[in-house]
Length: 590
Image (tube, rainbow, N blue to C red):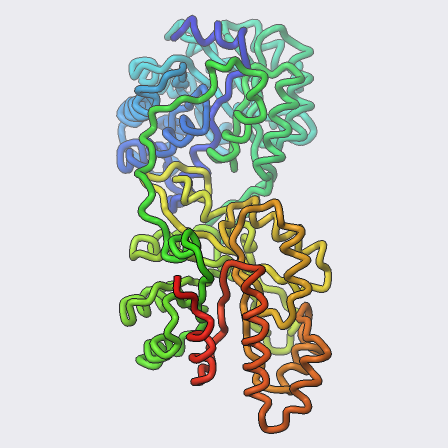
């Protein structure tokens, strides 16, 4: 492997993995703990992250050893053996590449001996001893190369290279960290760093951390101009923002991937990610570089494939058969009344607007299959994922994704809600879980089998914007569509015409109007609802028969919709015998 790393650098762009610490934090580990210690206390988690980067297509895995030296571990109150932590780290990374049909290098990650705040208090000879101890353990563990990363002071980087070169003839990659003014924290330019390091026995030079994708391109160009050695860049996913106990990073995978392509076009030989990057970012890098890399280097991985998905959801099975699908929508009130309401509908599918637990409880009580609405409002991505995985484990399969609407906040009716993702992002989360990936891109031990639905509004005032949102939901992974309640079919017909080339089942929501007052309110005071003038006139002149007229209009609408859509959802929150009759009359024998 020693000679092969330099050989591969000369032949193609090597993709390094992304952040280890970011994903460990996302998994619930404190920002204040010594993360390398997890090599011993939670090796399964570290292994899973390595395997996820292998699955993403990374050519180089960095060991979970940044800060795994005596002084840095002591800063976190960790007194575990430095040698044991580093040996375990190498073993975990090497295990992750077993059985793959392509070359994957394991790189021993070496940080500066001390954090910047402790630098002045530690003598040079002690720094050298600390680096020597860690490098010895990494080499003994069997790494293929060493990566000295995130060095903010040139003298420390030079010291570390010299120590490593004394101990081994393994390839050495020397990486410095630069700030937005393209200087190291110690004040050196990329050219000064490159010139100093290239005079030492290193295989490649590079930059990592601190900078996001855009500024890193400038550093790359300066490094390339200064030396003839291979150059690598490993930017952060933008500037971090601390939210409570978490750091979040703004750079989307697509933006990161675009810059990875530019790095390659500017001559980078190594491209990876630092803080804030995930397996999803690296997967995007691999995709963007696909035509620049030999076909045989495309990722073929021995990471265990997720288990086959369980059988289709009840709705999917019904949609696969001929006939018109009918469901009833209810909002659970709690207690036996819910079961009675469902039995009264006679429906064999019920859309539940409420918590997952409500749907699961109703399924057990009534034996009727449920469709559950999931809203993204006021929920973190991690919390949504945890709830969804738990619900799936209990048997929930069919979900409809909505952004959600926050409740009014006292005297601040214009106050917005809190969303980490909207409905489109929620659909993407579910599609990822179905593919065996979590929200960070991490490979899961199994995959889910959610049947993913999305809400659409044919009555939206801006029809073009609604159509664009609908297409985005389908692209994110939506497998069926349910409309908002409609009171005329013109908007639905136009939307279906625009989607005519898309093979996606659509269910229309029908909500019988209780009378003129409700119709007038919806027509004039609720945005994006279309009530035809003739419907308003019919209800206004109906006198005491308004509810019956509203039901008749709904039945007529439902009958005409049969030729347009695959099914209907009748909103039955205020169920009457007439609505029960409506469902019974409309049910297809199939």
